[in-house]
Image (cartoon, rainbow, N blue to C red):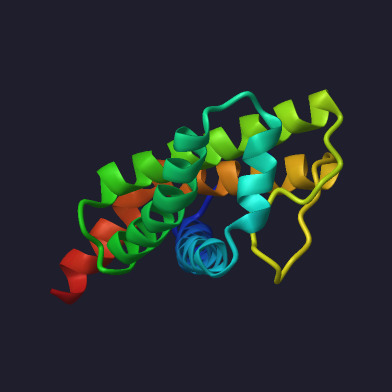
Length: 157
């Protein structure tokens, strides 16, 4: 084992900050993008939700509110409003997406989920499960390291 010197610790800290901001703004962009894509083309999401035994009213409410919720989370993250609470909702959202993709794969669904509208094809399968797992891990990394953003904000304010 090698000793951790102050210089090495400083380097690890800088890398952690770099990854934090890279992941933080990536999540914001993804939430904006998916929210607007679902608003522009909700048909694929409606068709995916119709596969499950949900009432039509619940499908319409979900199709209407999910993109608004995603965009609201992106705006709150961008403006740094209630960061801890917002990140908790992001983790819950990505947890739901992960479980939804596993369940859809388990059922053998082979259609586009409508996650990204018409822009990107997103079929149920290992790729979707892996993507949602990575997004969940990134959001968990962000929530456990939210103090990085708070300390940077204190420094600049």
